[in-house]
Length: 422
Image (cartoon, rainbow, N blue to C red):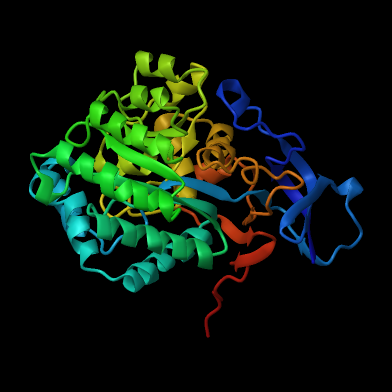
């Protein structure tokens, strides 16, 4: 059935000829069509234009007077399959302990691994589906989910099977990433090479054979995995057809960006520690710099230098890093606000970064990220707002009114609570 959205105040990122991603000044040149319509046929975008050319009638009709219509968010970096929250570590950080100090005492990723190993697949799936429902409600239409809280063969495979089940049962697009090299497990402390051997010899062949992941990721940073061990994992993964993504330069100038570019990583993520050399290396490559402002906020880290990256000619994507330890939210509307407020990205840049560029970082820019005829109809309709720049400005407000995924209305918050009293 067709779905016609009419009287749109601003139709954002509607274009017949979208780029694969937007970089530098092109991130400001965001297509916006005022007083417009959007036509959806089945699960695809069919057409758009001004109200002067709007079809008279086409199946279901939504009058969007005063509202913005834009692509649903693509969140290219999450860890939303986990067993339990870690609010006690949050309190420890308030008391002055660092992320690394908490990890050294058995907290952090190792804490999540211990909990996950004792949680069944069904329990993990049920917990994750609550989080999936939450991010859809907030406007996300595609999500990448990493393993990495298992840190042994059985538990990593368990996580990836849960992600596959999510992919098979949810409406939004889901991409799976193997992140066995998230931390060195307790049983391999002092023997990082031995754990890397386990990843290469035992985990990767099974994951590739069962097609449990499309991407492989490594936490290449101080206190985690060295550039040499990262290179070993990526070389083995390349032979098995897995596409690299890298956790890079969150805690230090670690060489993670350089390794990512050398192995043609689809994205390098975090990047709080990024200077002139790293920007030069990233320039004119196919590797997408992906920034995670929620993690920087939650951990009190330096803000990634988004302004310098964009002004130097780079593209930038945004992800949430939804996880129990460093960003317990997948709210992408909040991420665009943080990007504007703290990283000095313009509203247009933040919207490109959370839609088209983040779709690219998931190998989905041909299907998602813009409102283009033939692409999947993943669409947000906002509440009545004056302008798209209001979205990051009103950072504490719930501005998503409807969420349409593959042409179906999954979320409708149009009815507000009754404020009348007896």
